Image 1 (cartoon, rainbow, N blue to C red):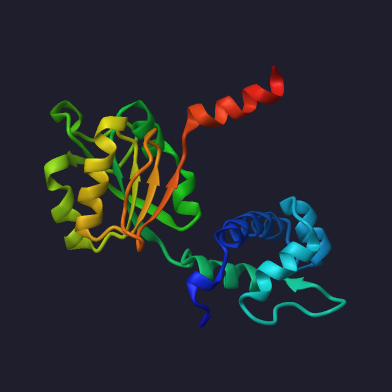
Image 2: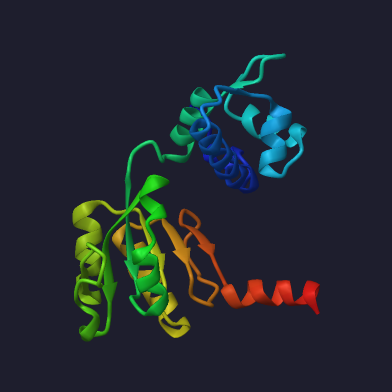
Length: 209
């Protein structure tokens, strides 16, 4: 796929993940082909949008027949880099961090949390029910460099978020999933996706009041 990442809108990349979820369900039901209309409806988008998103990666599908589910799934996995397990580290092992360590869905989607780090010495242990070991935060940079980790999940308090992000970037991490309620300042080559749970609840509150 010789397509420059900068040429593809971020929302299109996000929708590829939605399409992949739908394709996984189709494969589970042993469905071999799907039309753009059916796949778009399952993903909650217009068929014209789906075809435009997929067009960034060349001619895909056959007019009148639709898409081969297995082939399209493999293509999306290749584009997203999830056709093999990607190592990810977790920083911050409080209540949220511990819950993320126990979540079994990451590996299914092509990601493996290989290590976790926390500044509290009493948390440097193996979290119950989880095989991932928790290390002292001081060992994080060495671990990232040694294992070539490019992605990290941050679940640290707001006041610690920017310093931790700075450490991660300096170590070579270029993708951060941020659960901290802080807008991070990072270089242009680093991608940050932030999940602010309180903000999402505020949005919901507007519609249910």
